[in-house]
Image (cartoon, rainbow, N blue to C red; front, side, top):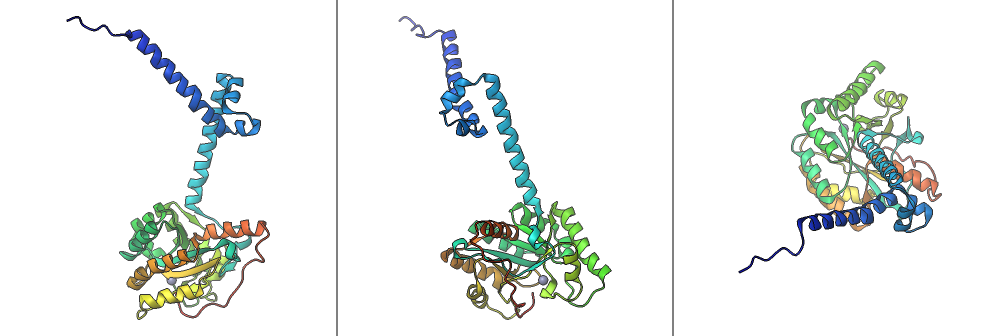
Length: 316
Ligand SMILES: [Zn+2]
């Protein structure tokens, strides 16, 4: 039996392959790049027409511009991930919540006194499962003991704040206040690469010198509008009620992931999140809460600046 001769020669196949690849590149890849460069949008013409009117060199230039833009955006995202800044209005100011209304139901969960073994990671697991972000106020000496847990917090995309080195309630002289806050800030940077301008005073005490120092350094002092009121005796049900009864758009919720047994908090957290989701809330970090507030203000829907409310009872 005669061997069948290949219908196409090798060179024909090669030519066809080159032609096909070229078509794919010219038909799909370059118009996409041009689209990403915004030229099509600006011209109002179809990608093919725009492509035809440009030389390959020009197309390559646009491609490079697209890449540069993408890299710059990535850089900004990265910087935001490690830089928890405060908008000018709140630098050196104290806030309990921001003014948002029902059209923007955003709320910020905050966790104090970590990083702490077991509980911080349980909280992280819940937040991951719920696909939401929060803010963690770290204590310097706890960070020193468990830097790897803080690194997990940052890797998961949450924001960090400064909760002093040793969580003092009593009056401290200015130089001690400076050490408490600056040493914590330095360790946060050393261990996580993050800079934060968010501060939460231990116990919510605003008069012992720590807070004054933080304000003088342009930190935003984050108090809260909802307190879970975690105590040694509180059940998870009580924590759920405490948060849900006081939740509001623009609110800041005080919770704890460290400093002791946080089993009740870990039990309460999914219930709190699910119920607030049911009510239409989205969850944001504190820097994101300020961004939303700025947008809200600019769209002239917001009424005023902060709404100072009295310090809630209970300690944090
Ligand atoms: Zn605390």
